Length: 331
Image 1 (cartoon, rainbow, N blue to C red):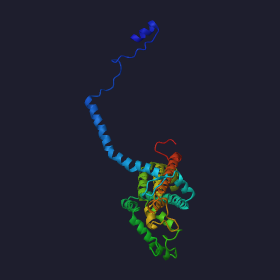
Image 2 (cartoon, helix red, strand yellow):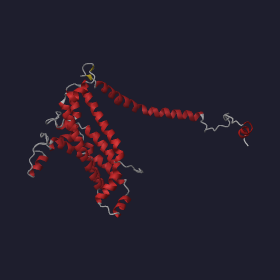
Image 3 (cartoon, helix red, strand yellow):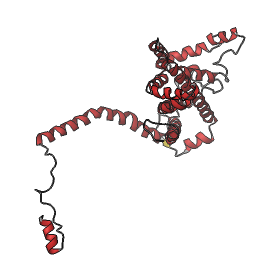
Image 4 (cartoon, helix red, strand yellow):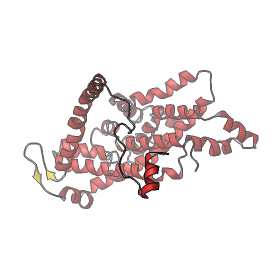
């Protein structure tokens, strides 16, 4: 019988005395040399992080905070910022019809171009997924435009293709469709921009293809045995299993569409024409800041764009539980 039990029987009281140091469980002993080595490894890890931290704070955090301050000021780079409070933001939404038009055009471009691009990338990825011969060549061929799609040279070529008497105009004229220059037509210049965005689906297609390769073939075989046709297999197997990849591509596609600049600048010669139909928010921001010298106002536009993109991303993350299915999820 232990000492504690004997004390309870005799006195009726339980001893509250803690265990002696010799009775306490001890963890593995850490040698002084090992502790010194761990400290050196920790310092070395932080040392490797220093260049990234300098770039993160010096090129991202500090400029963002300063631009937020400038958005509440009147600043033209030649004089000190003059505090104006919310004047820039009030002007944006109440006294700047060009900004409202720019926001509408950007929203149309995002809502139309992004789904079409995702659909085209998914269709091509599914075709390549069922093709073995020449698949590597076609993957490279479809991926190449995404590497150069945002370059100035491609925008110049695109402008020449859709100009009057260009290849597109001549091709359509051969079938009796005379539309003239797409670039100078307010009704056609935005579709030309959307086509350019869709043409750059290569990177999205590769991600879709990687996702399709991860879907077990047994699921398709089981669905086929149950009598499911191609459309039902696509709806019941492909889309649910591919939903995390769709979510990822949708999020990146929306963010990238809001940031379109180079192609709009080249196609419109920096004017945003014709009739302001290529005056996307990023181009309008550039014009207000670097052409008119209204850097405080341009900073306000940039922060409005950031908030809009953040809200859309938050909505996507909030609603993903309703349509995104991860492996092992019981929903």
